[in-house]
Length: 139
Ligand SMILES: [Fe+2]
Ligand SMILES: [Fe+2]
Image (tube, rainbow, N blue to C red; front, side):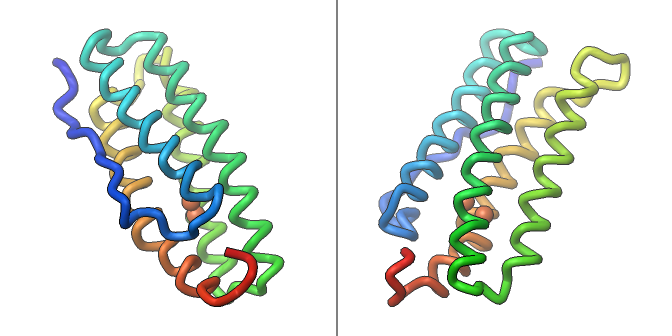
C-alpha cells in the first residue's frame, strides 16, 4: 500500500521565531515530505528508515537548541516542552528499532505520527515558546 499521508505545507506564518529555529522547522517539514515521497516510491524500504533516522538526528540537534534557549530565558513551560521532545525521540527510536523485526510499525502509521507530531508541536508548543520570547532578545 502506498502512502496516503498528506504532505505538510510550509506557510510564511509558521515563521514564529524570526531566527535559525524557523529555518530548522522548515527543513524538518522538507524531511517529513521527503519520507512521504520515499514511502510512495519504495514502500517499506531501507531508504525510508534512513531518512527517518536522519529526521531523528536532526530533531535532536534542533531540540537541544530550543532547550538551551528555554533554560537561558527561564521559560516556565520548559519541563513539559522538554518532555514532549523526549517522548518524540523515544517513539521514533522504537520505530527505528523495530524496523527490521516482525513487529514493525506500518510505514503509514510512522509517517502519520511524524507528520502530525511536528505539525502540532511547532504550531502549538513552539508557538508558546515564541510568544514567551516575544519582546526578548533571545528570539
Ligand atoms: Fe521546534
Ligand atoms: Fe520544541
